[in-house]
Length: 190
Image (cartoon, rainbow, N blue to C red; front, side, top):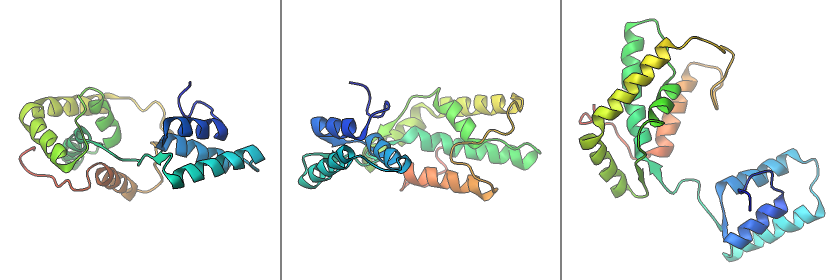
């Protein structure tokens, strides 16, 4: 069977949810996208949605929450990238893209997933002891590549970006809040 969102109809998504017993965030988003883009739903689609609602209410299908885990590496890389970018931007006329830098570094670092605060604390400690130099090295490499990159497509827009200088700060703050709601930077990692 194809993945939950490979151009699936509402009926197929509901069938998969009933079969698996779970409605994933991707499946939920696809149902929402179909509903938003359709001028009118068919009787079959309404019946499938009704079956899904009944299954959710009885517990036959469980909606998987969007966040059941965090990747601690993301918060560590973001913290390092923001600190380094702030230093560079304060001493030069260069403007760097924190998102590009973090994505580059994260693609070259191991993930550190956790499902509890205790697990996240363990992963942070492990990263401070074993991975600090590697994180710094990858962020520095990402910054160097970002500084050397020509401006091929100046009209490109970052995911979720809207106009305004405060938007970047809001995005970073939102990212940190969603991935690490109880994270407070400490000086041991810097």
